[in-house]
Image (cartoon, rainbow over all chains, first blue to last red; front, side):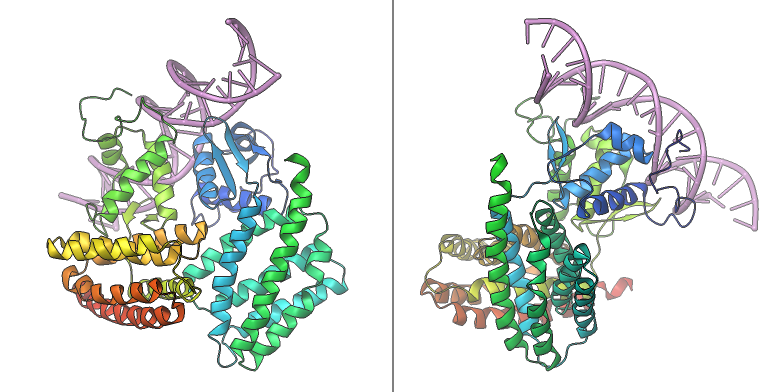
Length: 234
Length: 234
DNA sequence: GCATATTTGTCCGTATGTATA
DNA sequence: CTATACATACGGACAAATATG
């Protein structure tokens, strides 16, 4: 447990504290953020030996964590070859937007008065505007995702929340292999705001209409950019 | 590998053959069917030692399988206490139907002509009718689930398919602690048929209207029956 | 409330199979 | 084709937590 001398893991800090979750889940948490934040880029292999050493956990525990993330579609498990950070195909991008349209539109359409979860929606809009002012493009993308996560959360369903957490985690994998995330997210800021305004006055159907065209536009643009970005290796 | 003498596992059959999947996933498959078919009822603990012996796999491998099924919400993992077959609360039932309404209704509403996947829908209706004629009530429930899975599949999304596979697996847990599944499923047979007829002529919105009231009715009835069935242990 | 047995959590060593240089 | 590296899976070990009497 007190491994050799590497202390970069950041696992021991809350080890003795309140170990409410298992080691495997904490390891999975660490790896998940590493992946979604782009530290491990799509396509790279995650060696059991190396990462196990780096995080100071045994291979058994690490394999449990791998299994979790594989199930979340962040890793792919090739038998006897190891685990790799997922590389999404264009059909995956299309499917991600298919799910987004279903879930986000249905959540928004049902709105008839200013919804209970409107605070999160407005907050995400505000965060996005601030990120642009400060030219923090990474944060801009995050705020955009939070905005749409807040939209989905209007359905008030824990299972929908979890579903969309996974959907957006996958979507981040797409953004990480995309050329210019700034341009992509920036142009949708004002449209997010318009959607928020419709929700503010309880106009669900109006918001849905804006959202539907938003999602179509974003999908087409992303598919195009993605095809260009990944064409080199096809 | 050639364990003692128990051959009840059914794991070795395709062991030497084409072992394309890992042992943990095969173990998870076995346990999943055991659970969804009601062999392991909600609430029972699954001992690492016992099941590991019964299936002839090591604890490490079994724990990976447990981890998978926990992630699918079929098992719950209590730290240092083990894994248990999930017991759903009423709020879970409500949330399951919330997701069903979102997904199934959206899939059905989009229909404008007889959909490509109509064959599966019609087949499920036919299976249900046959099951009733033969008084096979277990099969009746299965056919009913297949019908609604086929509805969701009309959206043409792999991720939606996987989502609903999980949703219906959870729903089976509810059925297994319910008093009289026959009555429950039987009364919805004719309504399934009506929905199928609307789809057959490409009337998506009409089908959605029927489906929405169907889901509301089923939810209310199930919540009521479930509250009664689990009141004994509360 | 205490002592004991059982079970889980985690790690390690190792034999076997598989892929790749 | 051989060699090497790695993943797969097993079994054993011990600590820690929990359940039982």
